[in-house]
Length: 397
Image (cartoon, helix red, strand yellow):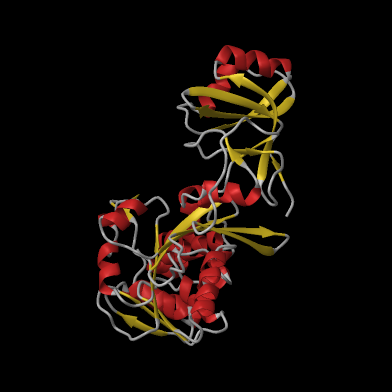
C-alpha cells in the first residue's frame, strides 16, 4: 500500500529518476516478480510504490489528461472519472454557473479538479478528501489547487457548486445499494441540501426509490462514452422541467460528438412489426428510461412495449443497426436450419427479454459455414423470436 512517505519520495528528484527507470521495465505478468526484485535492489522498500505507479500510469493513458505524469493507485484509477466525461461535466458547470467556485468534496487524486482547471469560465477550484495519501497525490496532479483534508459530510467552504463521488464498493465488490455508498448517498444529499450539488453515482441505482422514498427532486443524468455506460450524475439544481437525461458521448475522428435526450421530449411511438433494421439503443438511453423518447426523435418504433430493442427503416447517425434478413421462431432446430442455409460460420448474438446464454447457444448451433451473421433474440409479447441479420453496421455521423 502506498503511503504519504512514498508519495513524497515519488515527487522528489530521486523519485522522479526512479520512476523513469521503472518505466523502462516491462512489469508484465510474466516479468513482474523479477522486475519488482530489480526495483527492490535499487530502491529498497519504495519498489512496490514505483511498480504500482508505473502500471497505473500505463492503464490511465486515454483516460486521464497527461497520464504519464500522474501519481495514483490502481484503486484510485478505477474510481477516477474519465477525462472526456469529467471535461464535459466541467463545461456544463461553467455554462450553467458562470464564474462559479467549484468544490469537489471527494477529490481523491484530482481527476475532476484537473478538468475543472482546464475549463474556461470556472471562477475557482477547491478539492478536499479524508485520505491523506490521495490528497498528497492530488497536490501533485492538480498543481496550484486549494486542497483541504476534510470529511465530505462536514461543509468546509462557501463554494457556489459542489461535486461529490461517494465510493461505490463494499467488501471489495461494486454496490448499487443506496445505503452502501461511502459516504452514504442520502447523507451527502442532506448535508448540502439547498446548494447546487452534482453527485456522481452508479448508473444502476434505483432512481424510483431515490425519488419516492428519499424525496430527491433533481435531475438524473446518465452518461455513456463510446457505447459504455460510465456513470449517473444527480444534479440538485438542474431541473428545467427535466427529471431524466441521457448524454451519449462518442469520439469520432478525434472529435467529441454529443447527443442528449430528455424526458421533456415526446415519447409517442408505436409498437409494430419489424422494419428493415433492428436497433439497440445506447446503454445511457436505456438506463435513463428514455428509449421511447429517443425512438420518437429518430422515427423508430418498438417491437414490444417492454423491450428496449427498436426497429425502423433507417439507422440514426452514429448508431449501430442490424439489417434484418429473416425472422425465425426461437427454436434451436429452426435456428440451426436457417443459419446453415445462409452458410453461417461466425455469429454475434444479442439478447434482450429472453433467458438465453449467447455463448452456450452458439456452441449448440454447431456452425460450420463461412459467412458472418448477427442474431438478435428477443420477446414479442409472450413469444420468443430471433432475427437473423447482416453483421452489425454503424451509420456514419
